[in-house]
Length: 148
Image (cartoon, rainbow, N blue to C red; front, top):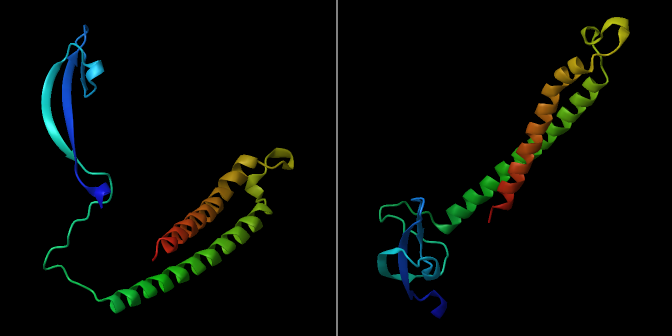
C-alpha cells in the first residue's frame, strides 16, 4: 500500500534564452544557470498506472451471467469468422496458384514471349485478395487473444 501513497516533490521550472534568442524550458537546476524561474510548485506524484474513472450512476449494469453469455457468444462469432477467413484464404491461394499457371494471349509480345508486367498486373488483384485474408486472420486471432 505504501507504494501507492502520494509522494511530495518539488519542481522548479526555468525559462532560458540563449544568445540567439532560442527559448528552452527545463527543470534541471544545473542546466538553468542564468535562467528565470517560472514556477516553484510543490507537486504530488503518484506512481504510474491505470486511472480508473467510475461509471455514471445511471449507467446500465449487466449481471455476471449475462456478461459471460455475451462473451461466449462473441467468442463463437469470432471463431466462426476466423474459420470463414481461413476458408477464404485457402480459396484465394488456390485462385492465385491457378492464375499463375495461365498466360492470356494479350499478355504475350511479338515472337510469343511473355510480357511479365502484364501478367503481374493481372495477378496483383489475386495477391491483394490473399493479403487481405491474411490480415483479417491476424486481426481475428489478436481479437480472440484479447478475450478474457
